[in-house]
Image 1 (cartoon, each protein chain N blue to C red):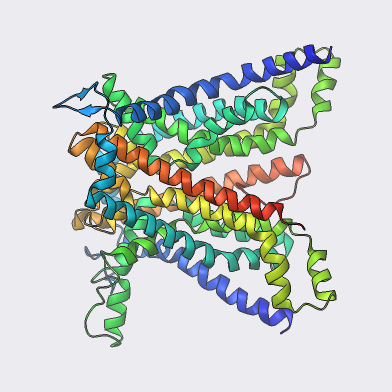
Image 2: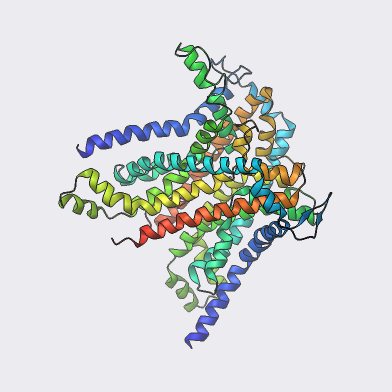
Length: 290
Length: 272
């Protein structure tokens, strides 16, 4: 009886899930598997030859340009993630601990609005702010603080980092906020009652309990930034490519699908490895005796 | 150190942070209403000429129509598919549930360039003509997980006994769903539609690679960023888009809260 009911439930569930599952299989899984297959094939003139090879991966791993671009993508994504999460934590902490409950939704709304405005225009406006004749330079020269426009803030990795840190700020704030909201406030009082200072209570109680949120935030910022195409193109002027720009060039401009596929697969593997590391850290924190 | 002084310091930081978040958006209307042709300070004077130029731009109008078509189609598709997934995951246990849901939610954590490139390679390999339809396919895929995230909360907080009461009163499965479940999750459906619509309207990478020769708003904007003379019109367009997004978001937030109030939830949380 119980087994029959379970079967009926399983069948109903599987029937219901099949349209979105089928859609994801055809539009996502099949193309990604195709890329995976291509990455082991040989590039011919105008077509992909059906000859198995590991040459694409050898090229990806040994080519100095690929290494530079891959390292740059990892470093930029890492720095952006670190900066975004460190800057976001105090905001999440403030909204969770100091804002009155009925005003929290308004604060979250205020934080998310900029995120919903055109990404391209936001990126471009950072170019306007940081540019040679941009807002910062023209106001600083206008005020007589500097004579020459600052050049270290445009067309380089710094400006890419700043723009991305701005673009992904809400992604970092929301998960940390959710984790902080879940913290039982009486634990903090207990810490204080047991003679801990406010700073020590924060360090030994609040921060460890907020860690799952911090790790989720890091992951949510890291993954899209490493694959960002627009910012290096608009802010970096196309001169400082990241891995997404390189994949696009190989796939379309140079029409080397197998090498482009190998790049894409390598990037996916790097993202997956780092994500797993984050999730492993998360599990460590969740397992901690409370 | 009292709670008030540390709170004051944090409040100061929070306001400074909001200024950082809003800095680019505050600049938008400044340059959109500025009569100068160069995007730089000092501002020249008040003018509506860029808005006029925007309305009379035929390519821009075509891009807008394309973007609206894509956004409407993919938000409806994503929400319909999302309803199936949210209902299945919140109501039923079935084999491989984790794996299946993982695949469906995967686009949320997959760099978009990978989705766009792999789909493009397959479509080109099959000889499919790139068009608005191919963009809709991609946008539906990336919007669906966000829709599911919202719809799952709506379905999960549903009281199952209401449906059972409907069955007891002689309704069929489908009519109970239509008459009882659907109205209760309607606020979730509306926010899912709005979020998917907004995501699609702003999505660049997939549209850039899968639209062929058809312009969408983001790809049109991208193509214009290279020409300094075209920038003021883009600023005007950006201003209109910001206002539109805020209105859409406010409507979505209103429905989400009404839905939450109806099922007795708390008003915090948003997308999460």
